[in-house]
Amino acid sequence: MARKLYPDATAALDGLLRDGMTIAAGGFGLCGIPERLLDAIQASGVTGLTFASNNAGIDNEGIGKLLRTRQVAKMISSYVGENKEFERQYLAGELEVEFSPQGTLAERLRAGGAGIPGFYTKTGVGTLVAEGKDVRVFDGQEYILERGIVADLSIVKGWRADEAGNLVFRKTARNFNHPAATAGRICVAEVEEIVPVGTLDGDAIHLPGIYVDRLVLGAPYDKKIEQRTVRPRETA
Image (tube, rainbow, N blue to C red; front, side, top):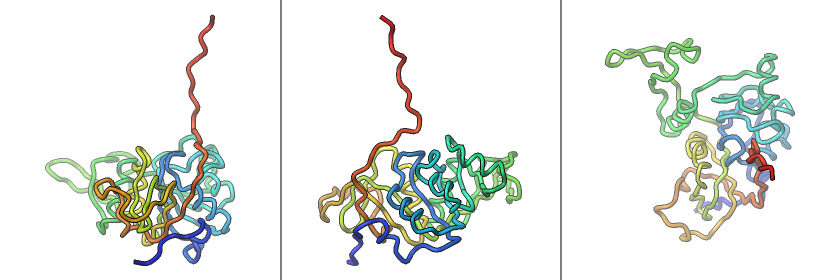
């Protein structure tokens, strides 16, 4: 078994990065995002990147850091969200954005990872999402063709992993990390804890190690919150 463990994110990405590449990034907002790997990509200075990711986090966090440094040329996303720089660059024509409905984006990543070049869906029919796409009728209903996404590199964040690269995601962090991981020709994962092979329950593994090429321990992490909402203080 090839050794998959690397000492840090920079080492784990060594030889994999180049200008103009497409990267599938897991996570949702600031939940389950590969923070250490994104920092290493920023530090590398590569430019002209295309990111397939649900969104770009918030200003100067997650992929938002790479937007600030103008290393991202295109986003394939479902949501601009709270990222004002994302919004500004898009409206100014400085950033290409391919909007993809959230479920469609997840399926495009899953399909790419499964070797499926495209699929038909009703989502987006009759909207701007359908422009320029093949339309077919099945059982009297219109469907549009969506292409699977195959990325040059996948970067994901896991909760626990063993030394063979078998991953367990924590709760909602599983949502986009799993399909993003399978969509890349090379997958690099960062995790909170690495345990010996045989420690993890085989039935509890979410992503088999066959999909993970390189692995790095990213802990400790500081939990960041997109929108802090608290209950109004009761008056005496």
